[in-house]
Length: 348
Image (spheres, rainbow, N blue to C red):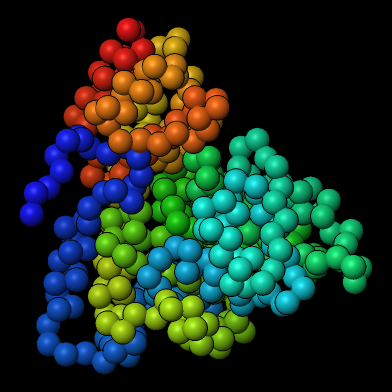
C-alpha cells in the first residue's frame, strides 16, 4: 500500500495525529489472552477506579467510542421530549454533529451568539422566561465546550458562575470536554478544578485528540444519573465489545499525568506558531491563543499557496479566517517549517 507523503505535518486537526507510544503500549498490554466483553474486564475496572481517584468518589466514568456519542449520552440523561439545550451558537453539538441532538434526542437547541465562544450567566437567565410556558420548549441543560470551538477556555470561576446560574433554575450543566486536557494545561490546574470543584454535572473527557486512538469517556458527577448510562450507551451504539482496549487507552492518559504532558506540549506549539506570525502585518490572530488552536486571517492568495503544501482548514472563508491546530506530536521543526512557508506566502 502506498502512503501519501505529499503533505508534511498536518495543522488541520489534532485528530490527524497518530497515537502516543504509551497509549499503544497500554493497548498491546491489554492484548493478552481472553477477557470478558462489554466492560466486564480488569482494564475497565481500573479505568473506573481512576476516574473516582481523579474526580471524586461520587464520579462515575463510562468509556465510549467517540466525542459525539459521549455528548449524546451525557445530554440524554437530563432531557425530556419537550426540553431544550442552551449552548453557544459555535458549539460542536450545534454545528459539527449533523443535528444529532435534534434528530436522535428529539430536543431543540437554543444557540446563543457569542464573540469568543463562551456563555455568560446572563445568556442563561435571558432565556429562562419561557419556563412554565406550555407553548415553549423548556430549557433543561446548559452545554458548553471546554476548550470552546474558538480555542478559548473557561476559567474555573466562569464555570462555577454558569453552574450556579443553571442550578438556581434547576438546569444541569454539561461540558463537552473533547479538549478538556488542553484547557487544564492552559489554566495551570488539574482536571478536577474545572469539573467537580466548579459544579459541573456531566462532562466528557476527550482522549482521541490528545494521544488516544479512539477513546472518550462520559463522566457523571451526579450519581443518580448513572443507572441509565449502560442502557443509553448500548442503545447509542457506543458500547464496545472489546472494551478493554478503549479503557486501557484512557487509563494510560490518566496515569502519571500523560494527558497533561501531551496537552501542554500541543498548547506550547500553538503559542510558538502564533508568536511566529505576530510581526507579520498581513496576518491577524483572531482569538486569544489559549489551547492548541490558532485562528488567523491572512490574504486569500497566501492561503491558496499554503494549501498546496500544508493541510489546514478555513474556519470562515468569507473572512479568510483559517484554523491551525497543533497536537501532542507536533515538533518545533514542524512549526518552524510552517512559519517559513507562511512568511514566504504572504510576502509574494
